[in-house]
Each structure stands twice: as C-alpha cells, then as structure tokens.
Image (cartoon, rainbow, N blue to C red; front, top):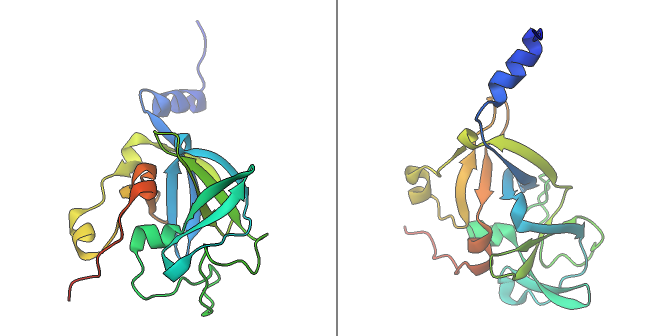
Length: 186
C-alpha cells in the first residue's frame, strides 16, 4: 500500500475535476485584461504603425511581409470618449498605442487570430504573461456594470484572490469585428 503525503493528497484533491483555462494577461492603462491563449497567434516586438486617421483606433503595420490591422484595445473596449490614453506610469502626457510611432521599439504586439483565420495586432506596453485559471474564476460581466459603462469586447471577468486585480476577459471575435461605440447618454 502506497503512503500518500498530506501535501500530495491536498494537491490531488484541489486538482480533481477542476477545468482550467490558459490566458495571456496584460495591463492597459490602469486595468488588467486577458485573452484566451488559443486566440493569440504570437507576441512580437511592436513596430511602426501608420494610418490611424481621425483617431479611429485602427492602423496598419507590416508583419512577415504583409499588412496587418492594428487595433487600439482601449479604443475597441471603451471607445473614443474624448479621454486621451495615458501611459501606464500614470503620467499626464497623452499617448495612443496605435499612433505612437515615436518609439516603435517599445512594447509588444499581440497577434490574434479569429475563427475565420483573420489576423490583427493589439499593441501593449509591457510584456504579457501566460496564466492559468480555474473555470470557476471566470464569471460573466455584471449587467449593472455593463449598463452603466459603455463597454464592448469583454465577455467576462476573471476574479482572482482578494489582493489581486480583476481581469477583463476579452472576446477576440468581438475585438476584430466590433462596431464604433455610441457616445454615453446624458
């Protein structure tokens, strides 16, 4: 008869039957976001982006010899509500992840793929990380929050431990095919 240590027994009990999901986690402005790992094709250093005319939240770059749509995640999720995007260090200098061509070597481009095989790049300032969460940690976006905040492309939340921030779980299909947001109602 094999002797099972209490630590091993606890690990087996905690993992029994619990499904997990891997996500790519990154910070944008002061919020934390996650994308399902199956939607991320690769992560590459950010390069020059052009064509963000009229601050549309979309631009173009060249990746592997082909044009690649680059989407400003903040614009896609929260819309262009007249608030400039600020750098993660909370400085007051406005900065747009799509149109910031002054320092193209800074940051990363998450290249995502939707179910139809279309690619798009999502610029992020800091290095994204891979995390694993239990399925029970992923919850729907509260309807009272969604009703008050003009938000798109978020399919749910990942609730972490008490001292960890909530992660907004992005829907890659909605990110790539979202319509412009309407201005908030007065």
